[in-house]
Image 1 (cartoon, rainbow, N blue to C red):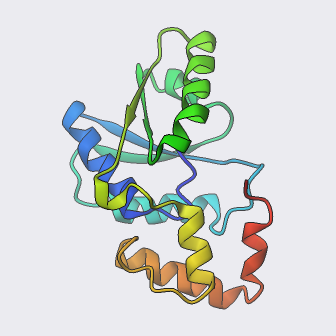
Image 2 (cartoon, rainbow, N blue to C red; image 1 turned 180 degrees about the vertical axis):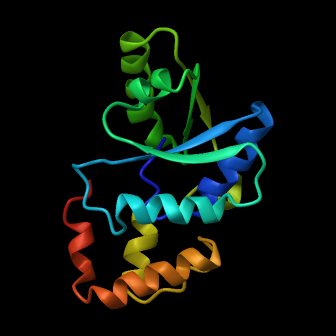
Length: 165
């Protein structure tokens, strides 16, 4: 589960490697009301479907509420969470322990992206793009195009960063 706003090469890397652990992987897009996403939930699902096209065993879905409740509702037993840097670990570990308390039968597996993607975050991608940077080495080509279109459509793009941590 994640917000995938937008999907990055790091996300795709984790998805591909997670497929080695299971026959079917559900990539679930969270509808997080606390964030101000660049892309709507529907747009993020569409972009993720395009990013995972051709990957056998992957489906894309969306959810509201707790990720652990979504996992249980799908009849799954494992949730995979990506960790980029050590700074992600404290929050993710706290969330995993809370999820374990809420639903002891759902396990959390942490995966790190390949080194070349370990520093990439959706927030950083949006900020760099809004300042005119070339983001082509961080996101799939169609994501770069979608980000540029969204930024051109919303000339006041800096508003996307007001509610980020």
